[in-house]
Length: 482
Ligand code: BES
Ligand code: ZN
Ligand code: ZN
Image 1 (cartoon, rainbow, N blue to C red):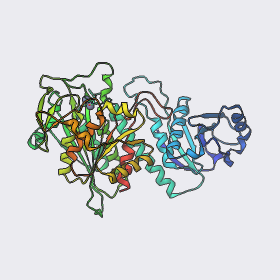
Image 2: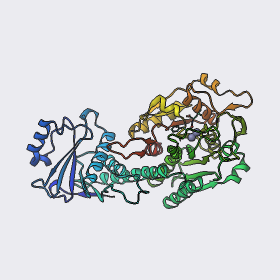
Image 3: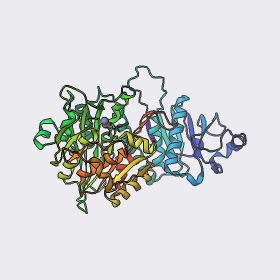
Image 4: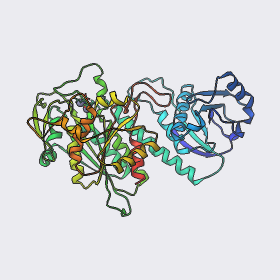
């Protein structure tokens, strides 16, 4: 789907459909005067009230050139924000393309072009690349229309395009099955993205990790025939930054999580291809950052491994030595995310990152706590947490601050090593976060547990079933607002 920007009057737009948002308590804009009777009838009959995700279509409208007029519900005026607009655009795109619309025009009517373009591009994404005959009908062109030129609209369209394409890049990676996205192949995809966007990339291989002493990460990797990779992507601003701040984004990159010897049940295990969603989010954010040039240096680190049950796999009770020198008793091989993340966190600190944010599909416990709605946010620093939460709010990615009191630290006591890698069922997402915190030490750090939010089990009106691409926009916003 191509996205375009057109300056044109409403009635002269040529398209298969021209869409406009109407909220519950909106008067129709003057451009829709010709359709007043139709709109009144829709409202009187309750067929269209303006609620979110509603769509009404008028064929062959008199007096305009577009073949259809589509009004999309925007919800309540008081609750209308860019998240609602993004969803309205996404819902309309998904419904209209299914009806065979190929060229869709969108009358901006003074609304935020960035959110509209994002909604359209995100709504257009289908995870169907391995269907050799797909019945999904695709949109060919999405054209944002405004009556008069404006540099601001142009910038907004461009930003929307960059953000949504980057989020779809992440969704594509997350959707790739584990046989087609091993740690090596993930590193290759990161390399291709970096080359295309002019980012620096370095991939640490197993030998290098051994030299460095990343025993915690390597312990997870040793059960798989697929070698691990630590992907490091760097963005440096063109002009010298004003402060010495350096943002590190760390993402869990488990390309498949069988659980290892502490093996997972068969039922639903296929979903564990999305256990690299944090890593993919970090890479998608770097893509957007490369195009939008924030003024802070950003380094992304993705420890990529496959958690398998080969004959060399680590066993419950094994004790590994992390890069930081702390010893870890691996009581459960399925708590592997934290084991790979801590070596990446230590490495990020050594590379000079002054602020760290990680994203990880870390625990089933966060799904129990927050369902599929909110990201769980944990932190050792209120200022950084405030920045991350503000960025998430701006981008419509729901996030909930979880506790991390010292009392919970007790849960990770090991009889034989410095730390155990699990803290029991109670407060499972919190003990997992505490494990990471032990390695962030005094570096301001935020941990985002996205196990519940990185994958949609059912399609939304505005988004396909499957990978959500959560965190890409929040991370990009965080860097841009620094
Ligand atoms: N990748 C899983 C967490 C997960 C669960 C992600 C559900 C997405 C959906 C993680 O590696 C894991 O297995 N965690 C264990 C930890 C436990 C052994 C302490 C869990 O949550 O059960
Ligand atoms: Zn696991
Ligand atoms: Zn996992």
